[in-house]
Each structure stands twice: as structure tokens, then as C-alpha cells.
Length: 191
Image 1 (cartoon, rainbow, N blue to C red):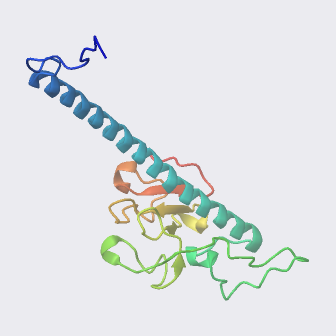
Image 2 (spheres, helix red, strand yellow):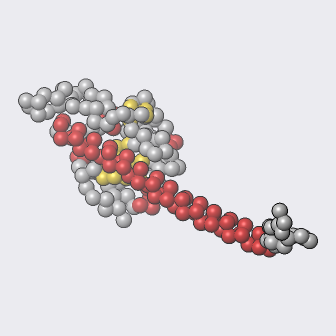
Image 3 (cartoon, rainbow, N blue to C red):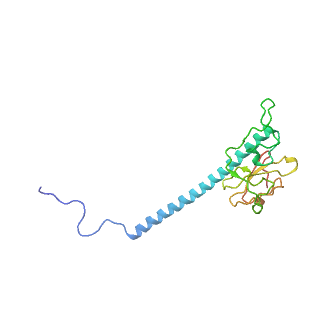
């Protein structure tokens, strides 16, 4: 083996590394990229959360409309979408009338009267089966105005407080807090 030479490392010291300044610059760039990724994923989560909340309201809206079509009246409370009301017969296909529920399935929550948070006996009795919103709070059915012409499904939002004025047909958005509303029959004309 004549004429072999050592390849690779140079002798006499370290010559091919990064300076501390270069390492800090790379670290700052990585931290900046992580911050951008977190803010983008945070806004994406907010959009997804909003979409899920709206989908829950739309699903409940459709169930209310099916109930009204079958029974020729609006439900008084959302629990009537899961449990047959005493005043309604079972669906008769010949007459085309009667309760053919459950209209929402599965209902994974129960209503709890909590006046401090705005959940009154007007919307249900404690223990009634009801759909829950994204924040695990009961959705409620509000009937503002005369003769029940106006009907909306309301979610209390992330703060868990039902803030939408129940008797006002089109309350100002600012008076609804972070509640989400979906009108059943009319357009949302809130100022």
C-alpha cells in the first residue's frame, strides 16, 4: 500500500463550523417561522370553529323545518325534536301528519335552567334532551314577535352566556354578545 494519504480532516484545528452569530440568525429565522405557523393555524382553527358552529345551527334549523312540515306547527322547545310531545300523534302516512322523529339524532346533551347565564324555563326544563353547541352549551329556540312567525336557533357562544334579547325580532348585533343566531323562516336582518 504505497502512496496512500489520509483523506478528510485537515490537521491543525477546526476550520469548517458556524459562528455564534450565524447560529443565532438561524435560530431567529426558525422562531419567526414557528410564530407565523402558529398564527396561521390559530386563524384556521377560528375559521373551522365558526364553520362547525354554523353547521350545528343549520342541522338544527333543518330538523325544526322537518318537524314543522310533519306536524303543521313549530316546536315549542328543541326537546320536541328528540322526544314526542304529548299533544302530537305518531306519524300517520295516510293523513301525512304526526310526529316522525327523532328529528335530531343523536342528541348528546341535556338542558339546564341557569338564569344567571340566560337559560330560562322559557327554553326548556332541566333534564330535557337538547342539541349542544360547539362549547357544550344547549342550543335554544327563540320565538320573538307576535304569533310565532319569527323563529331562530341560538348558541350562547364561547362565553356560555345567552345574551340575545328573546323578545326583539332583529336585535342589534352588538346586543347579542358572542351569540350565534340562525333564523328559521326569515332572513337575518339585524343591524
